[in-house]
Length: 92
Image 1 (cartoon, rainbow, N blue to C red):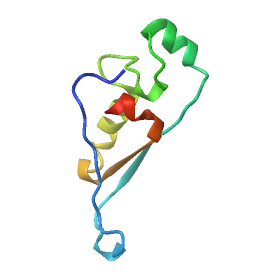
Image 2 (cartoon, rainbow, N blue to C red):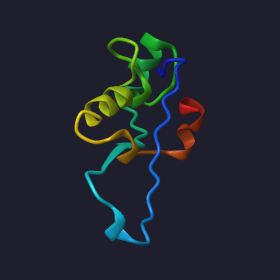
Image 3 (spheres, helix red, strand yellow):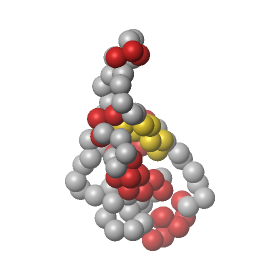
């Protein structure tokens, strides 16, 4: 589950002029709706969140751990996180 502390991630770039884009960029895909772990997550965490939003270890979710690793290579402002619109209630 996401912690109470929100993490805001965004990317602003003028894609109409790709020549202006410099540096390294990254995309984190977190839009899955898998069902394999649904029962396990509900039994152990009491919620119906997709696994990428659950804190299996520590206080950070899987997507927060992934962002932490990505930020060691790519500036935060150059990382785009793709989520399913149905997950807004979990990440807002």
